[in-house]
Each structure stands twice: as structure tokens, then as C-alpha cells.
Image 1 (cartoon, rainbow over the protein chains, first blue to last red):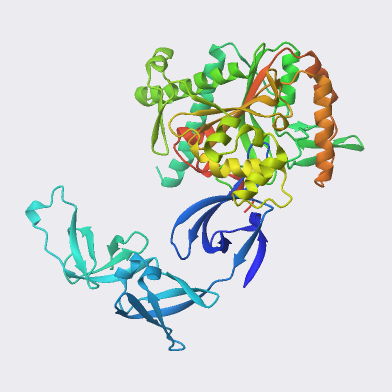
Image 2: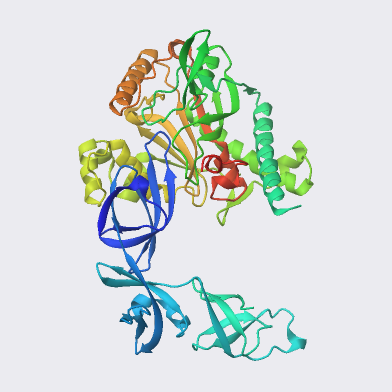
Length: 189
Length: 352
């Protein structure tokens, strides 16, 4: 579904059509230059491309707001370069190519639920939770006598992803990973 | 100290340090600090301004009163009265400017005038003022107390903003509006000066033209394609706006298609707007009449014409002046991109 709105009413979190592509509005800023009229500066993230750009609209300009739907699905397994998810309500499955899942795919385990974003019934992106818990499967214990100036070490997570963590993290522990930066956030407990 | 208290005391301290630097700078140059009304009978009729209107009671009668959008008219009246070097730190009000990282509907302005002078003298003032402010802040940091004039004079004039170190002891970049459109937008001067040709050039670039005015399209292209490039390595002065874009400014004597107006930028942030002031009262009256007509067309009310101001314009010597946004200037010296971080009580938090 599409709806025409005035750019002055664009809000963070909306999806709009920009250059015919759906974009998520990640930031808005009202502007009124010198003795000019009103403008809306928006930060836009291409749903398909993932690329971020800024554009300043005239407040009175018409913009197409798009209604994207998102369905909560649980990750099942990888099939080559595809990721297979399932809707736990309808048991319907969806196969999403790696290009749409994005680099956060390295954090998926069968415990993780994501939102599959759809536009005109086609999947256009995957929205991850901000944080994901993962088990450390391989870690070398830091030498207690040699930790000065060495705050981080590399460990392997249950998905095979290698990540930098503080030296006190041990094999078998569960840690929380920030999905936006793909980096260590904290211990799970 | 608690985090919250630190937040408030830091803003309050840095703001007063900025104001102290401004006052020292202008006092040393023998400028007189003045104070003019916030509540006025005749505001600037600029059509885009969304005004705060109230009623002023006189016994049983009421008259419209407006919160001032700038102290300009009164300061020019003082120029006409012979106060030829003056500055003011004050508040200005523009409605409809919430939800923004660079606007607050009530904001702090530094305005100064000098006569006899034109806008190039104000450009030099801007360079000298910002250099002095940077030196004052740096001298304070070193001395950890109110610095002496000697300490200020030898302090570094560097300020770090958005990851770039600006050396304010160096001259700024000065570039004309026409040059910027040519360089960043690929629109040559003759197209910029022709409203119909400009509109079709902008439409070709993919902008929604619809029934947008020339000024709206100019601003939209400027904001998208030019502004992010301004003041990137050093502050940038953008000068010579189109004649239609400066209702209170003198036209350029050598080319009347342009007006003697400039703005200056640091890291894409517009900090000030200056003119060689218009001293032709009958031309000023015509421009005000046109602006009030335009206000009516936009569904806003005709605010009338300030006859006392026009009488002053008639008597004013060649004068130049500028308004500088003090909240934004503080953003630079506190290295933040959000006006909410430099105002103790932002309007957004009062009216949300």
C-alpha cells in the first residue's frame, strides 16, 4: 500500500519511496535556511541496498510512504548461500538469499528470530534484534601474567564467527553481540 | 558531581565564556553594547517568517505586538542616531522551528553594525572575532582561570569541530554564490539568473519542481549539493546572493543582479548572515510592500510598515551589519552537532 504524505510529516522509522526504491528513514531534521522556507533533511537507508544517504526535501513536497509488512520468523538452517526461515504461527517457510540477509547472517543460530521485511509481498530485507546471545566455542585462556596492554583476544562463536572479546571471556561462556556493529557487547549474565 | 548537574554546569559555563569573549572583543574595538526591544509593534515582514503574535493592552485598547525575529531595525535606528559601532547579544524568536538539531524557536543572536563600512569590513570582523574567541577558550583552558590579555594574545587559535582542526588565525575561504552553483551543481551563472531556465535545470536533476518557487528550489539544491561542502577545511564565506534574496541589503554597484550579502559556514553549519545595508528608504518601502503582499498570498497577515525604521534608513550612512547565531557558534566551540546540547532548556523539551 502507498500513501502520499507531505515531506514535513516524515518521521523516523517510516518507509518511503526515494528514487523508486523503498528506504527506511533513520533520522529527520527540520531546517529553515536563513530567510527561506521549511525543509526536512532525512537520513535514508535503502532497504535493498543497505546504503545510507541524506536528502533534504521541501516540507511541502509530496512523498510516497510505503507500507512494508514484517513477519517474525525463526532461523532454521543455511542452504548454500540461502538462509531458510520459518513462521512459527503458520509454519510457512521463506528462503532468503545472503544478499538480503546481509553480513549479520554470521550471527544466526536456530534460536534467533528476525523480522522478514516485505514490500508488495516480496521479501526486501531482514531486520535483526539489536543484540544476540551466542556461545563461545573456542577460546584460548589468556595468560594471567601477560594481560598488560592486551585488552582483547579473538574467540570463535558457535556459528563459526570470529570476534574480538575482552581477555577474561572463557570457552563455554555465553556473550551478547551487538548486531549493528557485529562486535562484543557484554557477558550474557 | 552527578552526570546531570555536570551537563547543566558545562553548558552554562561555556556559554558565559563565549559571551565574555564576544564582549571583550567588541569592547576592545570600541563598539558600544546596546539593548533593544524583544516585543515590537512592526516586525520584519519577511514572508517566510512564522511570527509569534500577541496583544499589547493600552488601557481599554489593544494593539498587535510581535516577538522580534531580529534586532536589526532598532540597531539601524541607532546607527542613524550616530551610534556607528555597536553590538548586541540578544534573543530572537521564530515560530515553527522545533524538532531540529540546528534551530530553536527562541534563539540567541549576536548582531553588530559598523559605519561607514560595507560587507567586506564585516567579513574581516568575522575572521578576527572567531580567532579571538578560539584564543580566549584556549587561554582559559591553559590558565584554568580568567586569562589575561597577554595570555589570550599568545594562545592558539585552533578549534576542533567534527573531527577537523580549524586554525582560525588563517584567512578564510571566500567564494561567490554563482561560483558555488557552477562548481558543485554544474549550473552556470546565466542559468542561475534565469528563473525558468534554473527551474528546468533543477527538474532535470530529479528534483520535484511542481509549483515550488525559485527560492525554494534554490534552497533545496543549496542544502543538498552545496552546503555539505562549505567550511570543510577552513571557514567559508559565501558572498553575493541574488538581488531577490536580500530585502534589507544594498545591490552590488558593479552588478545589480546581485546583492551585497554574505553568510559564513563551518563544517556545513551556517553561522551568520551579513549585508551592506540598504540606505535607500523609498526602495526599502517598495520591498516591504511587496513582502506584505507576498505574506497575504501565503495566507499570513500583513504586518504593516515600520515608518520610524524607514525614516532612519533615509538618514543612515553607508552601513554594514551581521547576525550570528550564538547557539550554533557554541556548538562549534563545544564540538557538538546538536543544538540541544548547548541550550539549558531547549524548546523541544518544554513543548513536547
